[in-house]
Image (cartoon, rainbow, N blue to C red; front, side, top):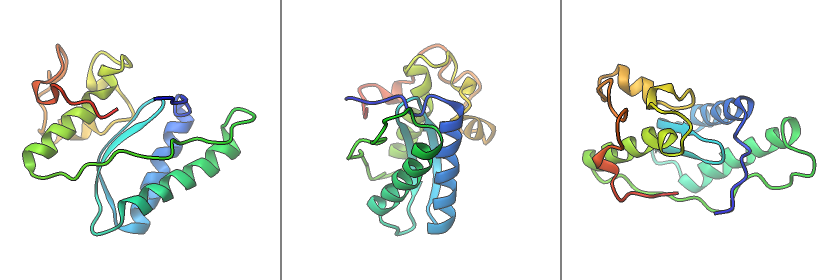
Length: 151
């Protein structure tokens, strides 16, 4: 995949996070889990009947307008890939597996050594809620995400 690291700066990550929060509030969509990496993000959303394609279109358009105005390198015209990957969560085990995948992603990409070190992730929220043990993901990738590659 040909991705540009437009989300590399803290400013861009904060902007994307703010845009997702704004659209969540407007649409009733709830972000259950989120991680924003250098060139993409992963999330689990509870759509409450809202159309995922329209939601993603809103996120991409609103972020792109602000990013291109405030942060983009000169000459940048396109921020996002045309498509996105989606998956319908089938049950609790499927949800847990996707939460693990999302929260381990910064370690997988070599951005941090421990999931709790990554600032732009909901991992700490889940850790504090007791979903994860403090040592989770610290020594190796969780077995639950073995063979899972949604990048």
